[in-house]
Amino acid sequence: MSRIVLVNQSSTPDDAGSGNAQLFVEGNKVYKQVGTDSAQELTQGKVLQVVTVDSPEFLKTTSATLATLGLSATLTPVASDSTFHISLKGYLGWTNESTQGNAINAQFQFYRSNTALQDVKNFYRYVSTSSGTNTYRSSNPIQIDITDTPSTGSEITYHVDLAETGGSNNIGWCTGPWGSGHAGVSGQLIVMEIAG
Image (tube, rainbow, N blue to C red; front, side, top):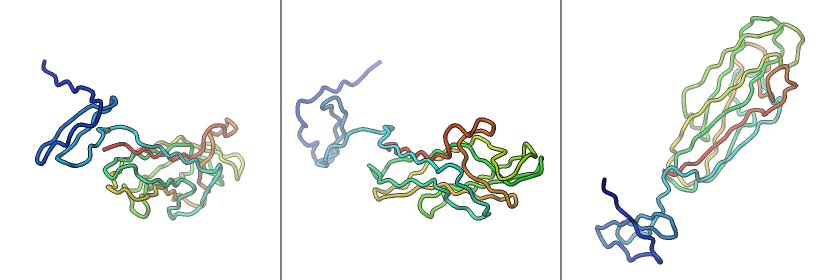
């Protein structure tokens, strides 16, 4: 097996020269340089920043039109060639459905500003109990992950929209599974910028 060893430099080496490229190590970091361009640290795959947003507890809607419901994250990319990993997780709950066995449906859509990032996600659930009204009687853990490569260094906003598509029920983020006092986290949006 062969290998290439890069010796740590005490100072930045001379330019590679027109038409040439070089790799070098300085301060335990690996850099690349093409011609007389500025040297760039090799950081591919490194997490550059993480933004986490929690939805307010019991934020809900009865609308069949997609709405953000508190899950929106704004950040400025560290680099224009980054990939973004967007994760939605939490507990989704319903109220006002009085008949056990009735279907209650939801839709999710991920956006970068006004640009839809994937097809609408449909979620189906059947009411698990017929007792009481105006309480979160049915809740389910949700986790959906997508990636995005916006190719920009300008500020961007990611948001997840939610709609209730199964009738007149309230649908929204609760803080945990029914029967546990709603303990735990509400809806949460996590955006990670990963070096390209």
